[in-house]
Amino acid sequence: MNWIKLNSIEQLEEIDRLSNTQPVLIFKHSTRCSISSTALNRFERQYKPEDETLLPAYYLDLLTYRPISNEIANRYNIEHQSPQALLIKQGKCIHESTHFEIDYSEIKSKL
Image (cartoon, rainbow, N blue to C red):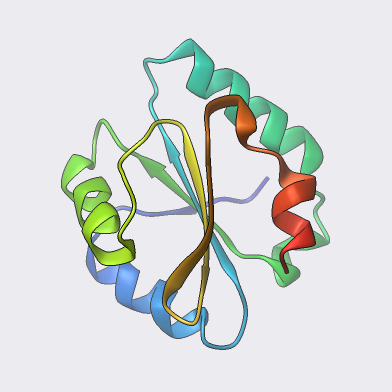
């Protein structure tokens, strides 16, 4: 899977702009958490290469970039969780799931 690395707060502006023309996914991952690793692995197995044009996917290592995670919580009015998948459309979070509730087929159904 070709993740777009989310490593600057300025990229959230890019995500908001892009989300005006197509939904965008943000996946927040804790590299020290086995539940997060399992959820990420499960998500990556469900995501198909052809979905990259349908749903750009941004990956946030929230341990390295915790200020970005905090800004995501503020900007999209969601509670910080890990792991967490957010579907952004027109600058708003229209779907949020955490832990083992992260299911790509459910996210894809909201497109």
